[in-house]
Amino acid sequence: MRAAERAYTAIREGILLGRHAGGVRLIETELALAIGVSRTPVREALRRLHAEGLVHFLPNHGAVVALFEARDAEEIFELRAMLEPISARLAAERASPEAIAELRALAEVQVRESKRRRTGFLARIGDLNDRFHRAIQAAADSPRLAKMLAGLTEAPLILRTFGQYSPAELQRSAEQHLELVQALEARDPIWAHGIMQAHILAGRATYIRSRGLQQD
Image 1 (tube, helix red, strand yellow):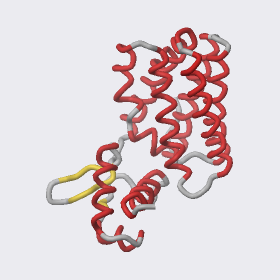
Image 2: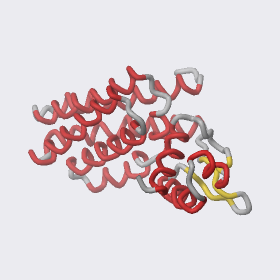
Image 3: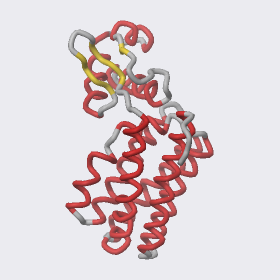
Image 4: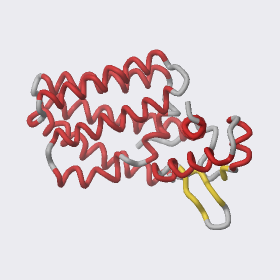
């Protein structure tokens, strides 16, 4: 693995697992020493993480882990719980057989990753999750809905929430993707809508638990 890729994976996983907390400064020299690489690949990794929204660059302060307030998180989950089930329902009606086959492949790999939990699995699950939800939006074939969802499903909050999942929750999340694919294969929009809504609300419940917040 290239040094830059190794640095990216290590720092990203550290953020997802909460080892690098929100608002904490990421010092290049310390990261390079811990990972066993030079500062150049660390700098490249931080730029990638900035593009993903997991890291911010502040003037005269350097790289800082992105911070999300509880209010921001609640709003993101609530909007996703309203909009993504519509996307799933439309996908059940409009997805091509090829699109459904791609979704099944993504879901099956995510199930395997959630069970094996090998080194770097959280970063891979985050990527698979992102690709799956994007593919659902594409299959829904609704440019207006996709535009509304873009800033929500790309939110770094979603990636960071994976770091708080228990092994059982990670597997449940992956299996919900697989059940959603089954709903699409059955061309059942009501089933697809229900599974997606349950999937988003389960993620919201995990976030609330991880922050020690009270559920309404």
